Length: 376
Image (tube, rainbow, N blue to C red):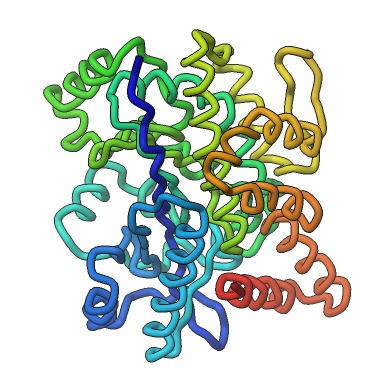
């Protein structure tokens, strides 16, 4: 019997750096901005591929309240420093109006190598995401639970969606981010492995052949972290509101523990064909929470509220164990008010009816995103 994992939790978020008066992306960071960020936040803040992006990582957390405290602290401190330059941050997985070919990527050997490897594909990747790490110390258990957790990735994606706009257009998808990200190799739904050793053999083949120079260049929706003893959930858009992000982090953590409890009872979650997982992934991309997902056992599409009820019943013992009922049950607030994508589309549609100006409607969306990113 395995010792129960710590199920510690950590969150990484990527933000847009935008001009406070217009909500437009900066093209290049002020030269001393990152120095000021590092002076306050140390290694918890890093630059990203595009100069208009910045990434944070929480400390290792052991409660949902800690996650909330960390995210509010990090967003606040970054926004305070950015304000010295008449800038602020925006949490959305695509920017409503930015043009990718006007962006300037960050300097450094790592970023130059990405351009050499992926050319226009990487330059076009003007997207932000949210990653949730869950501590599972045993390597084989990490793989075993990852195999089963893949089923729930579309359920998590659906409530996170925040990327309906691309280059000033409503793309008709709640999550357009993945349509861009899926152009990279080694992305999408993760492979299944019988053991950590089998996973490591795959990594070694890619490394020794020169296909990759770092295991972190496996960009699956869910992967063993190459840096920490964690499984890293990467499918979700970044949440505009902190409460939504904490809900998803808490739900992810509880689902992993629920799957572990099944294992302790000599049971496991059924592994379904990838074509079914990917169909639900697409439905979450396309509609978010509004059209539901397929229940593979019942062979029918079910509403997201019904699926949420079942998920929370499945993890009831884990919500109690982690004392995160309030944070997880925030899922019903998301269902009621809509995801960030739903609200962006509603704001844009209403503003367009009133002004008949796409530019003014996009401005309304940008104002909403700037405000809600820091609305704690």
